[in-house]
Length: 416
Image (tube, rainbow, N blue to C red; front, side, top):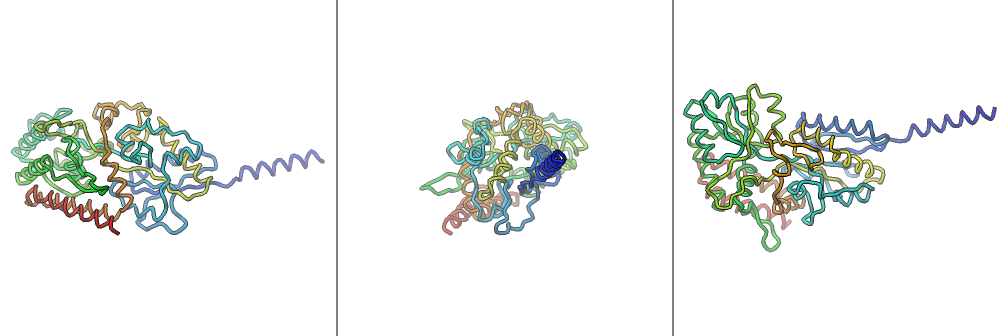
């Protein structure tokens, strides 16, 4: 009798242990539907492994979080509205991982991605999960029909002009287009020419991209627009659709578009590094400014939830998980631990493509977090002035106005 009671008691205890409460955390993002589905698959893989830990992934609805119910993780792109965070503090990633028993060596992260999300002293504030490089895509079938040679792995803007001219003369109505024009044609042209996109003076952030190199580059693009070599479709990634549909033959965009083009393009295409100006002294064509966003941890949650959050971040850093994420999304690997030999079909080791410095961009990221409204206003102004160039405004006047108006927006935010 006593033995049966003991067995029954053990059975009750086992049932109690199996019913341990699930510790749930939420990750909010603003990814497109394809990448959102990929993130959800990874979260489900983690959930199957984690026991009582459970990650819920949801898309940002645009509504600000209710008091007392913020997410635990937020994936923010450079141009996202950080109001999504609400009034919650950011918990710096490196400190957070250590406090929750997870070893985290930031030195394993590629330098450019580390600097895109660090605190200025080498300690990571966030996980650089969703970054990509600017690249040049070209429609091989269209070029072959035009009797034109495809660009090499590294080409100049002058060579691209000649190629666009050949396509235009052959009747192509959209030889070249670009997604993310501010990022591609101002930030990255600045990086290649070793000119500042912005600078700091007396502790204040100020735009400084109206130097000779950018004025010359934007003036060249303006002449292309007038000649029919270049078509502008928007300040975001609208041009991607024009390329994958076959309407435009040449495209500068993010390397993250590669998986989509590979799956959807009804034609053969190739990828090259972003073109550069070979007549600029000291130009570094391999220098590029990644675009994208990072995964941020919000402070103020329960210890059990923080431990699940730290476990999920460690899961995302596992080599096989990185490899799957990069292959499916086109985002850059965070470290060489993923064992990847290529980025977006470029045939270049990630370490070679990411061996450059981004201290200036890091300061801009900090300013964005301090005042999201001012940052977004500045970005809108720069895009507006650059778009005015394609409608005939002189390049110098447009960039001077962009710097003047953009700085006023930044300073106005700092005074609030």
